[in-house]
Image (spheres, rainbow, N blue to C red):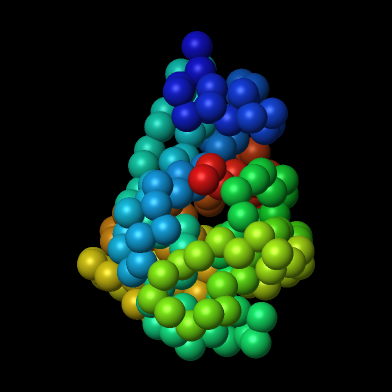
Length: 187
């Protein structure tokens, strides 16, 4: 029996990694709201161990912080990742060359918010597909607010939890030699 979040993905037609490979990660962002500047989303990581489903959750944001909404780095606006499944879209690398993270390696779809207010708004006419540096990385040691931590990335709030996330990714690489990661965002 699939855990509910995976059943939800299957109903949407997304690929579920449910074979018997241990640590074949299903990485799923669950956007709960577009509430500005809060870590109000969940990053789910599901995998099998000894044939049983394991489900770990990480408090995160899947939308940009207030700083980047007010100060977009591109004239088109600040990126907001569109819900969908992005197969083999990420690999282990370094976020801004500083620390291990899952970095974007294939195109993803984003919406651009360019009205420079504190509200993350999905503007359907502003969608783009490409490689924009939409990574999965950490905030500070124990961040309470998103602020500058996200310009459209998925960002885990607590460093200690982020370290666990990276450990899981490294186990997938070590045990299975699977070096790419698919990312599913539910909105």
